[in-house]
Image (cartoon, rainbow, N blue to C red; front, side, top):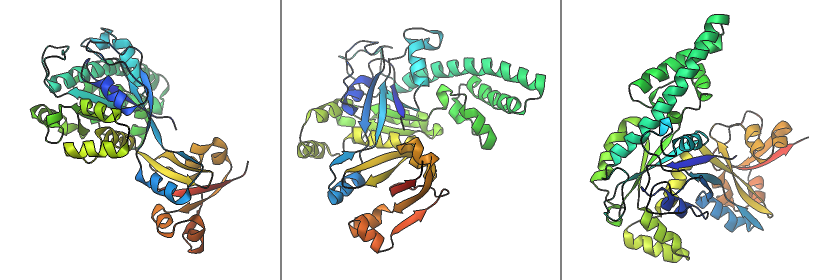
Length: 366
């Protein structure tokens, strides 16, 4: 399951520095706008202590963690919706991602230029919001004209439903609100998903702060927190400079000592990856055997056949049953054999909804 989070923000807010900390793929980081022109893609391991515990017990020949792709997208400026700067490239790259990690500069440093002259993260947020909303409004108006025409010409029920949804989106966008603020359910939500509006994507706001503000925040962070509270969006405070220092340290103990000195329990990059994973409604099940212990990514609510299809489409097509052990039982009893003996391996059919942390074997026939 290939899923992407796009890192966005104005030029010089710390996007590429953060990307470098998250990924072994190195984006160029420089003190001038448009340093990143083509999106850099990094495959990021999702931290999961459960995988480590399974590896300790099973001692497999190979270990494969869950991953999420992070895309570093070119900085945006005012007028991007009309093609200013690298606007068209920026907007097309965002459209291809599943979620947005919006980096906001929340630190003062005269040596790092700001594209608008002064540090104001709320203004920066609004700059990007407006550009995305304008592009979405253009998309909505174009699509609305087509769907209204279809609905009138042939009495197309789906076109009529889509037109109703588009009208709701247009009203919100004209008020300066993002599409994600429009609450839809049932059939309306289903038709809305196909529109792929930029401001309908889930968003995580990352406040990039100086070292002294990592644990306590600052006035910039509080301003952002107030500005986004109505959106119900997630917010993280991270010092990209500190994360860069952590990334340079090689040993685990050395990294933990550095974090302890800063009063932090874990690296901000690890926390960001986990939050982004959850933001996409992603969960993990495991397969465990002597050859390999592997974490598989699935969407919350998936039933067993669809989860099997994450491994291979043939598993879904020929699905017979799933043999499921709960993670807690596996850890408590120590092995698959002991779980079987204790009656802790369940046999589940096509209607079973896979749970986060399940350890699974699929039986199928092709």
